[in-house]
Each structure stands twice: as structure tokens, then as C-alpha cells.
Length: 275
Image (tube, helix red, strand yellow):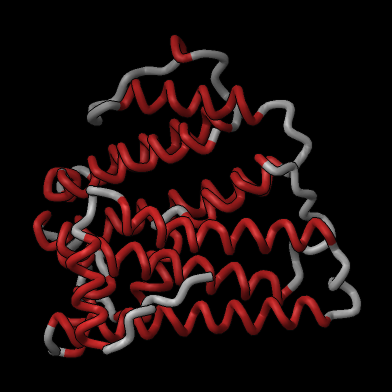
């Protein structure tokens, strides 16, 4: 189930990144694509024969992946509706980003970048899918403010670590406003090394806040013994750490070069922090 989701996300993420100039002129097609795949997950189509093709690369293979995801989700006991809410929210922010590009609204601040792109990294999508896979019952803590803050910092940490390791790739693709490091460099008018240092520091800040919030949850008399909450917290931690581990090993990014720059600049061999 997670493999289907990861493959689908990487496929359309790369399509959007490599063809952003094309979709800048036709952003509506992107909205139609995400509306269609969301409808597949919502079981509005019985099979792929009911899907009308769209002028979007790999569209039908993408639909097949989402039908496969749906078949594996059906029958799970956990809250699928919450997952679908997070999927829609993720796609709404991705579509907003595409429309920003189409309207040349790209010179955003680093703070605004994080507010938007903590969702476009698909962290909420992936984590709530993890809740389904582990059959976690969210009812006792889904509105628990400390948990939601923990999730928010985990989402920001995931986005930052992805950007820290991938900024060379984003430079090559020619769209510098899809990476926090490059946004920070433009905003601060500083060197790439200084922007990278600031990005790593912000990532580490998110992790420290996650540690603090986890301690707070463990001391909370209402929630300290909530096993479902403990499992949910572990999924978020594992996701953040998984992004770090995967980014270090994948050939998709020039990760070792990035780590060398981080260590040379910061003088600390253990950066970034790990969960």
C-alpha cells in the first residue's frame, strides 16, 4: 500500500517539476488530475474502464496505482475518512502552488513557503496512510492540540530535510522557488552555504520541539497511557527519520555533497539531528 502511494507521488512530482513551465500555461489540467485520483480513492469509479484519459503524462498508469491503493485500503478498520481529508488538503496545496507558478506568484517569504510546502511534501498524506496501515484509532486524540503541534513540526522537519538534500536537483531543474534553501538564499541575499546552514538549524529546531512535545504528551495524565497515541507518535517519528535515511542513500539527490557542506559549514559531524 505504501509502495503504491510512494510510486504515485514520485511519478507526478517529477512530472510537475520537469514540466512546470508547460503546466504554468495550463494549470487547470493539474487540478483535473488530482480531482480524478481523489475520486478514485473515494470509490466513485468501479474500475479503470470508467476513467476518461487526460492530457497529462503517465495519467492512466497513475490511475492504476490509485485503484490498487483503494483495493488495499478497503476493509481497513481505521478512519479512512481522515486520510481522504488529508489527501484532499495535500492536493489543494499542490494545486495552489501550480497556480502560483502560472500567475508568477513565486517570490514568497520563507515563512509562507513553509506554510504551503509542509503540505506539498505529502507528509500528512503519508502519515495518515501509515495510520491506516497500522489500523490506528484516532478518535481519542485526533483533536489533541499537543499531538497536532507534534505532527505540524514533523511535517515541517520532513519538508526541510527533503529540501536540504535535494537543492542541487532543484537548481538543475531551473525552478528555485520549490526549495526552502534557495528561497532562504534569495530572501536573505546570502551565500548558498549560509542558506543551507539556516535551513539545517531550522530543521533541528523542529526536531527539538518534537522531543519537547513528546515529553509533554508522556506527562499528560489524560493521554500518557493512550497506546493508540503512542503508535501514532512513533509513525511520525519514523517518517521523519525515514526521510533522512532515504535521502542519504538515494541516487535521486547529491546527498553526500550536501552533508559535506553542512559539516564544513557547521563544524558538527552529527548534523542534521536524528529522531
